[in-house]
Length: 528
Image 1 (cartoon, one colour):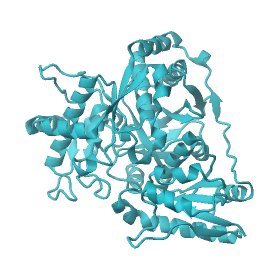
Image 2 (cartoon, rainbow, N blue to C red):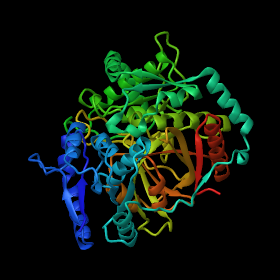
Image 3 (cartoon, one colour):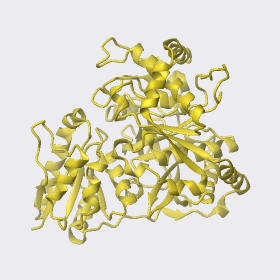
Image 4 (cartoon, rainbow, N blue to C red):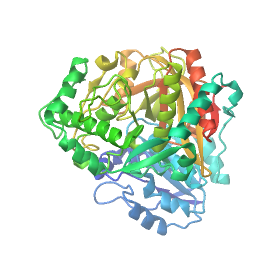
């Protein structure tokens, strides 16, 4: 009988840990039954706390837990929730035994997102690991993979959908090389409002990997954004709010700011939007990323409505002191949760799509979950891509008029603030992800489509995840569910629309060629 250590990384926010603990406990109970049946003993390496949860909830706590684990033991990092990877990353960097990251297949909190983030962090750190996921921990795919890990310490996943990009397949090399030359000549600034959100080590690009491309960071402080927001007149914020209402956006308002969305919260968000645009202009940032979750969450309403406005070409004008508008009619790329990989990707997308006459609006989403279409309207597996912020209204059915704002969940966002909820319109998309592996920047790209589901099925999926948040129902071309999970090195995925399937193919190859011209190693996934 092999003794296996089990560790559960959690949130830094205790409100989230206590609310989500029941899902984690249920997952661990199922996993324990399976391992015992296979003749192995599971040892929980840290206890359930008097606070009512059994998560590691800080980096220091994680270090202390790993100090008590035999470094040669096999270890499972089991996740049914979003987790802060830096709680366990220090211990895993020095662990010698086999490591398995494991997620429950559920959209609820979600473990899939947490596990994919941890995988991306381990990949960047050069830590060897295996990974698995399951809905009930009884399916053949899971059991076969688990047995392989128990016997060998590794799991082999099918990666035949991945191929190195051939720049000879790009019809726009002259255009692409011109963009790359311009970036290196003029250079680009990423505005970073406090680096390293929610333990996402994988979302930080080392400066030395950016500099050769002509891309540099302006390290800004969220305290500066807070101060600038408070300097914006309330009437200016109210004018942006009225602009949104005139566009047809719906706000679901209440009177209790502790649990409901209020006009005061929205106006403060609109003031933050104005402040963010002005700071981006002041420092010459082509793109900005706001961390929000740790820090601003205790001072201001959520940044998510702000982020979606920034990522849309059709957005409220913001003027300088002399009355001239700042980048009128043009999106200011925003990378949610200050994910620098998404920020770099967003800039490349914006440059290429604008040059090709394709929609420039793009966003990251969490790979939140996926399921068969239970309405029967689609035969394909349909993913749920979902993020709290950054999704532009141009991605939603009916644009601004098809967008709604709900109060952010209090357990994550104590100061409230509204979302920019919408159901993504059907259309051809390019998906991508930039990540760090072997101390190099790499990029995966693929093709897919956002699909429209019957209202009942779309609502089922929304309610199974976070119904306040924007959602994209997505079919990926040539990439199965398990291949996607096995290959992807992040919780986030970048998406952008094109006018047609042919346009999307062209834009994908042009963006791949631009990334390669800038020194990024590029692979196409599911694309011949």
